[in-house]
Length: 256
Image (cartoon, rainbow, N blue to C red; front, side, top):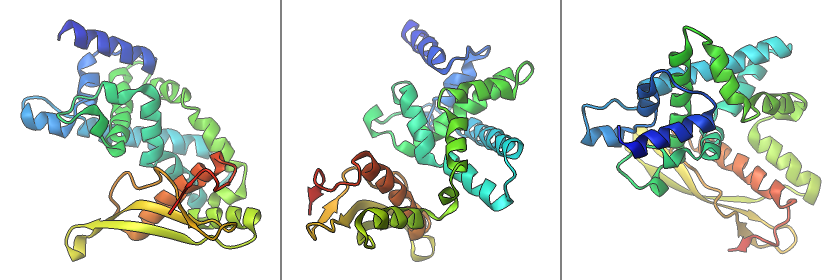
């Protein structure tokens, strides 16, 4: 390993808050399939991602089971909210993960889904590296820096958390504007008719004050979905966050 690579790994471990006994696990967690296509002798993150996904799910499920008396449907809903790709990618961005990823494409072109996958792979690598000593505890400690359990508690504090995303968005919009939102999605699709995938390239909402449709900048799909409804749900969650940061005012948003 070069001195530069060794220094980079040391810095990432500092950010993670965990020092690997087997640093090859961390290197593998950072390696994309595009990189292994050019270097077939090197393993990529996919197996560690599989493990990390299960580890994160178990940690969340354990916390929900221990803290509250919830029915299975509500626990499943909350777990899915925390585990969605956009959330995990945001955690990865907070770590500055893209600077450490081994890929053939430029770092700026690495998708949010890949960042989310690698975040899960790192969790899998931490678990596997520490399983004989601290096991799940090391992963829990890593996740604490993202206030994972605080986020769960916030969602548990309101019954609205269990409404479908579209209902949450519409309810909040009606509270402020006393009317239903008018939403326009611009879709893209790929694949054969029986295996179609969808994503949303643009989301625009009608400003009740001006009557104009306004585009919500950067609110778009970060991945492909097998159902239009799932793509819409993903984008509406982003739209809710986007407008909440602007106090639900449209005056700073581009008019179409």
